[in-house]
Length: 458
Ligand code: BGC
Image (cartoon, rainbow, N blue to C red; front, top):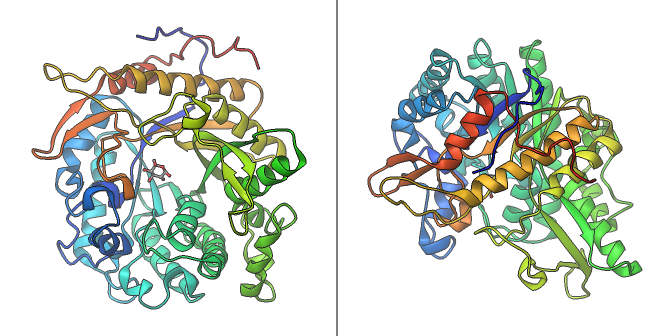
């Protein structure tokens, strides 16, 4: 087991754990909830691993008191979860569903009763199906639909929720859902992608404005997926290919919010977004977030490829590079999160960064009622060390949230990759806290940090 050292850690640092509605709640048709694009997609044949779906997931809708008590038992002070849009507004707009609102009321109250600070993500990929049927993210009307949803939820919960995140990883839900078709709603192509990107970027800023108008003391954030992108060789072609991937993965959504527009210089194919822009949109894309949530799991090594349309780049797989990976096939490379933090700080001079997700899927085995997941603990330890190193070097990093509380529905990958600090037997819904969960609790409780965070080579 990793030893701890009692360093002078920052007592105001926000330690937490993150989850998302579709991956955990289940109860997909209960108490008046409307369907979302994920309810539809995951129940279509052949779209997910073994045709698994989130219909029941972790049954968090019914078992949230038990899960909140686990968070309390582990003394994790902050809990990030998302609101399912179609639970509070079954058709996406129009008549709210009181039972859905009541659920989030109970959940938020349940956090506060246990001294857990709620951090709410407004959109973690589960668009109401009724809105998808009207074009969803490809229809510019989504900006007004989203405003209606944000006004309802923030208006209702602002008395108890101070920390809000507008979108979760817009690059992933537009890229996987509207370009590659491997996530809901299964759309493909540059046209769908370009429209979805621009409308998501508008909602990102507009959502921020609505929260700030309704709740002037709120901490308003949003989250981005990001990765260290390196070129496979120093050749000009590979370096350029890596720049295009970097523009897509790390710059596409943050730069318009900062008033820099889309990173078309680095990735010219993004000029297609301009078709969806109206006069004044550059201003509408801007919003000064109180914090930026970064979510980093791995690094990408990139080489030029003529066969990949638009991007002309391809990942050199971790398997080919013979480096250690997680169950997702993602390289384990803790320095990625360190460089991502440094790069975002250097490029954008952000005032407040929070790692809103980081974690790993490894296979777990239950032995005598225990799970000794040393590999996950090592992953978390090395990544937390890398984060703290960046912080010590001046990056304004103010929090770290582990992904995730319990094993859950990992989108197209189903229940196979387990990221939780807590194991779930999905037949019985019985929870067992893993060794990594106990380790994380100890790290937080004693204001301790893993060793070597000060003296690692850069
Ligand atoms: C998402 C989570 C997901 C995690 C691991 C992030 O992209 O926000 O919903 O489960 O990564 O893949």
